Image (tube, rainbow, N blue to C red):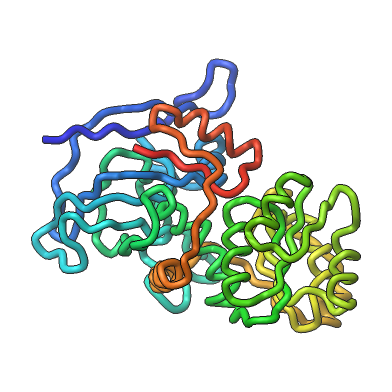
Length: 345
């Protein structure tokens, strides 16, 4: 039987100094595929800041130990269960972030919203092999390599779901993209491919220059000027039709000021905390849609894959690490990558 090396965190594994739990590489046998399972040899895993938070704090999730982190992978199908119909050995696939959400309204209730995701309620994918139900995967884009494809399940789909699936983005719309992380740069590329005008905010001149190279129409250094006032100036005081709100916290208040009447704010990030706040005046007077985005469903991911191949979208990868360099890759997340951080196997 094949051996499977993976990153694992065990209950009670804490640093001697009382810090966050530590992880370690472990080797186990690859399980047999169940009737509806596929065995996938992992080629690349794309990291999200959420993965680091889960490893460090658990994020309040009821983790099953030993715990394998990460949710976004691409790989090759090596074997299939006897009742599998969607894939065959040799097919290239990518994971889905929320496996039970296939289409339509998200599952869960008002009391208990659903958050059953890979690398959380379900096993993660930072592993040489994964054995999971066939419905938890979609076909990988034909136009991307494995590392690029691994960035779609979370970062790519989040931007697509906010702007296209829920946002109904149109040519000529003005889109504000906050920052230059994975979701932000996908938002930039998707918006430009749709014919929108894109304004990128950042605290780094160098990153703004790189955003211009990707097609950004305007760049705002938020350390040097009031980004809301600059948006007014760029739009003739109308404001932005779409804002990808990455910061969260009190940043929502700034987005409420910058959004156009009947515009849309997609709340995606929690970089400034898990509570959001803002003035009620612009919320009432402009009637914007304020939507929380927690990635998206499988059908939308399939739509994104089709758009990637059709439009020639190329995910931005800041750095590719080896599986033996997982700690370095996680540390890179703290430095604010330009695009995505990927681990290749």
